[in-house]
Image 1 (tube, rainbow, N blue to C red):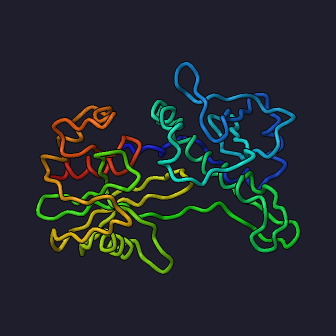
Image 2 (image 1 turned 45 degrees about the vertical axis):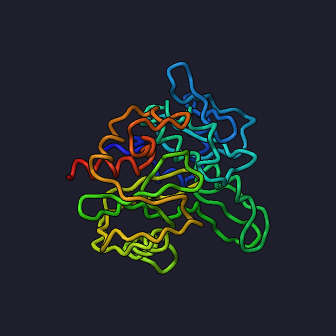
Length: 297
């Protein structure tokens, strides 16, 4: 299954990241391109593809994204980052929904890196300014020599099944009627399996077993790795933590199938129609997990 934000097709050219001279040459190439953005938001051309420009002498810190058929691609470090969760970044979703799959993957990776650099200009060890290193895949402190690396936060997102039905939750900031897979951050000292069991129990009161991995997705808001899993529930007894969720419910296979078969724009304006719930958008791995579960059934 094709998952949004994956499969950019670039040659990451790791050998060039550590070669400052090679990066300087790449930056001066006539065909070198820099991603055009509005802050951290993508800018689209008439064909709904990403917009690129040539490298300028005025460009400051540029992140080396990789090579596209030998063409060096860069992304600028913006003045400010944005660590708000995805649901607060509504203006970007229209553009994101229009991008071709490969462009979406390029943008997602670039966005995570650009945002991290913009929010990590100072050393966490001594507080001194840091500078871009390794083509933008590292920041170094010239004062204490500390090296800092872009972070990726692991998040489990899981379908919980019991006797042919799925447990789905509605986040407190979700649009009305929208339900999705339960999810939560992996904590230090936890395995993925332990994190799945803990998060499901905390949010819904349901105990699970037989946790298995399905697929993963990089999620650039700001920089998570969504680890898609499936688990079996001991029972359907719910004790919902309403400080975490607005609601959690069990849905039959027929209800899930009907929700996924509806047009993507169904439910805009709060109209649910004959559906039991509104599914996650196509850009979310939760939708891929639901499709996987239906096919598996």
